[in-house]
Length: 139
Image (tube, rainbow, N blue to C red):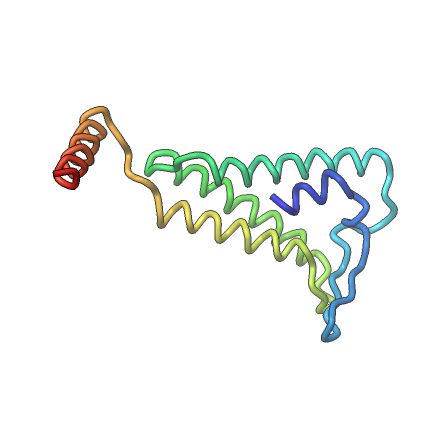
C-alpha cells in the first residue's frame, strides 16, 4: 500500500536514482523524463496498487476465489520480472524486482493459506460451538 501511496502522491520518484549505504544503487523504475501523461498514468497505477493492498487486507479469501486471484498475481509478477530484466547489462537493483517478489509472495500466501469456505450449515455449527464454549465458561 505504501508503494501505491508514493506513486499517487510523488510519481516523479519513479524516475529517480537512489544511493543506499553499502554502495547499493536503486535504479529508476522508468527511464526518460516525466511528462504530465506519465505522471497521471503512474498515479492511476499507484491507486491500483493501493487497492490491491486493501483488498488483500480486507477480503476473506477462501478456496474458491483465492486461486484465480493468485493466478492474477503470478501474471503481474511475470510482467514485473520482464520489466526488471529488460536491461541486464548492469547489475543494479531495480524496483520492479521488489514488486515481482511482493506479487509472488502474495500469490503463494493465497494458494497456501485460504480460509474455510463457509456455508450456512458450517457457520451455524461454528456459532453453536462458540456459544457452548461461552456458556461453559460462564458457569
